[in-house]
Length: 135
Ligand code: IDP
Ligand code: MG
Image (cartoon, rainbow, N blue to C red; front, side, top):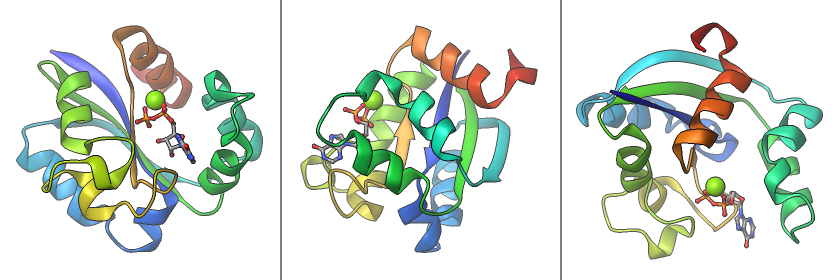
């Protein structure tokens, strides 16, 4: 079993797509081992996305991620990290396969409905960031 961090981003929460995304997460066999709906503070969003600091979209990303509530989940499944990234699809929704979450619910490369950890090490750091009790 492996764990990954998933976020339903403000665009998808605003559009009332959180329930559909959670439904799909369960249908695809993930267990939700932690879940909370919060508003990210600017400092939290800046720290969470620190790896992107200096990139042209960083300010826009922080602004977007603090623009409304997000649903943050720790998901468990065998190969959860890759399985969740496969279910999300590509960063750019139009490059995602038809049934992927970002294709279904994302509207641009920035406003792409969901976040997922990209490796074992980042998953551990990201889960600890939001769910220290699970570490
Ligand atoms: P990922 O979320 O698929 O792992 P990353 O490259 O890690 O993609 O980028 C993190 C997030 O930053 C993306 O999910 C997206 O919201 C935003 N982002 C990435 N590239 C761009 C861009 O070119 N323009 C605007 N936002 C971007
Ligand atoms: Mg990433």
